[in-house]
Length: 277
Image (cartoon, rainbow, N blue to C red; front, side, top):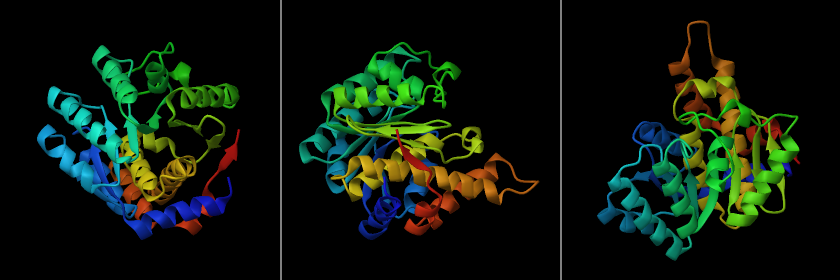
């Protein structure tokens, strides 16, 4: 993928300032909202079933994150998903912890089957569970056996393309090496920082940012998703570079949002490590 395509994706978010409806988990909602504001988008957070249809109608994309499910949020996700599908808005599904419980796996599967999900963003364990493959999910962390490595990169890309072909969605599998694919093409992204695994919400923030990039250009979902994933990875590297001896995970989280605020096309084009698989 040409670096200029990534830069253009960032520019489109800044110029269109998309409004994104996020039904996300209460552990990370504040960070998700701040990450969207930092990258040039605007968030709305509502899971009340009587409210979500109107909210979704106002927004350019919908993000469904199953991290802290309850009866109300599930009903809200279904109502919002139906409305976004009817309007043709992109939907990003984050199947947090799929495979860890029957409720999570079944809810994520129902959302994927019933509504027009455009992008699936999760770790390998979650995507395998969603796809019906054998996987063991450790809470919201990927099982170490499911890590994408140089040795299994081609197989991981083939799996992502297979899931994309079956679901019609772009698939973003994130970890030490990120894989983003549609049914025909797959890309490896090698940006990021190990410190992103030391804070809660890095993946949730990425899913919301992906919604902003998709809303800005839903006609190029693969490119938009690659740009979103690469932006988050480069931001992680920028945040780590600022860390001093007395800084820890709390400071890193702040630096990460700062880096998203300062992200632009030139920075992304210069630092993104994206390669076709």
